[in-house]
Length: 174
Image (cartoon, rainbow, N blue to C red; front, side):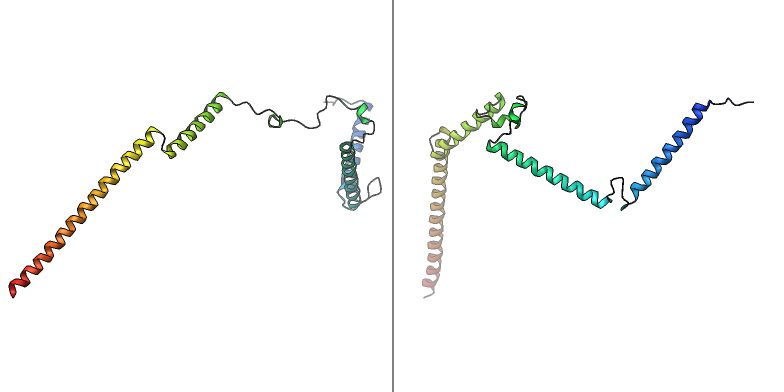
């Protein structure tokens, strides 16, 4: 069976596509060569150095422009600047007004302040709970002193009884 023939136009397009692909491949090969000069005649390290210089010059110019704007020395750029452009974005915390707390945060803050006030009074002994604690502690202290005095008295009695027991057998031996 016969294959359909392409017109000359399509055949020429195929040839031109092949040529373009070959050219692209040759360009890629040239780019892969590290020190091979490109169309500008500069090697790769020279291009890199040139690019770094341009970047540093651009940074210096930007810094100088910023300083001149800060100093108030405008070049007339103010006439063409966008009035809606914001140079510094403001945060809520930057505002001079104190931040408004949520209900929950406000309640927590009030609760903590109330606890602090109560604790301060408690330490001074001015609250009912502090008075009750102090009276209970005083009662416990008195009971402990009484128990200590009783133990001491019992120990003295025992010591006298032992002394009397020692003295009595010695006197009977004579």
